Length: 414
Ligand SMILES: Cc1ncc(COP(=O)(O)O)c(C=O)c1O
Ligand SMILES: Nc1c(O)cccc1C(=O)C[C@H](N)C(=O)O
Image 1 (tube, helix red, strand yellow):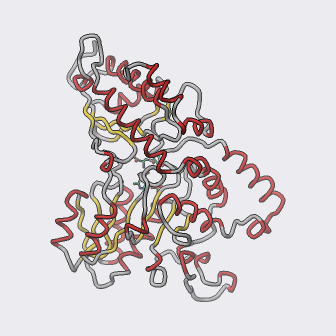
Image 2: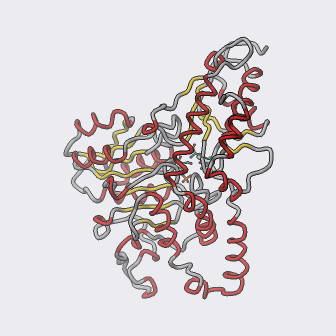
Image 3: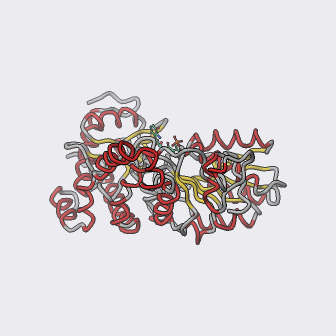
């Protein structure tokens, strides 16, 4: 009987991934369901940082750039993230914020199609993506067309021959909807465009194969499913076929072919090294590197399988009668927004409730960490790497308690 806590506990006992939970320093009494915003602290990180700070920086000083591998870290960590997203070696670099890398990638993509006057941007994407696409269009004098992902095909048909860079979000940060990267990229190529994907809500959560999908450029956060910590550097991927012609706007000296020549002119490095910018944020970068270990050991495919099971379990529990009167969950004003099909959803489940911000705040007070997005969306991120069936059971039980107290819009609490 999956509506009992005992059933959930049994699933956890049989779960091969349950060993990975102890790799994270999860606070007692807290259920962490917003790893799509900030992943929890991997236990390996404090010791790794201690080593970097006290030993490498403290004792080796500038020698650490070579002796401790600081110089190579952006590409070394890039290769490790590359393996998680289906990128061959030498195609992914780590550094800067996601926003900076989005600017870098979209500008470079538009420059790969200098004769194309239109830049397309996913209107359902995270705001920073949309703001940056707008800025790139202004800077390069391009016409910006914003479209929801569901209507991209129509836009590509209408502007065929005119579209250059197209910036898409792989997973809708609000609804959790997952888009077909391979098919969409093929459609973009058929229209002569360059596909730039924001993989922030997909990397480390959904099995990806950016090389096989023909993705041109991709960017993603280091602090969500990669658990690299607040402000962890982002990654930038570029297909190898673009490396020689990639004209990135951020021409920092670490991306120079011979940085220590201290030459007058910028000559881009070959390969993905040209996407390096300036001195990397070494502490954050090495924290991210240490954070990757549990995910690498578990494997994205296994984590995804479990996360999908957890998502199915959560939606079934939410739909169950919520009280003795037999009222189904939806009668408490809840609606599941995220598509149920596995190939159409990312790793968070979004519920609609008229008072989502209050519900999320009340859950937080009771130790269930979720978040809400305006105006009425409650997001619950189910990362199979550290979230258990029991967590889901307890979170839904708490949600029911909260819904008894938080009235629907226009309803008096009772
Ligand atoms: C899809 C997406 N892109 C980008 C970002 C953030 O960019 P940055 O790390 O620069 O704040 C987020 C979340 O904050 C996001 O969800
Ligand atoms: N990046 C964040 C931040 O700097 C502060 C608070 C939240 C975030 C997030 O990551 C939000 C997240 N990208 C979202 O999907 O809404």
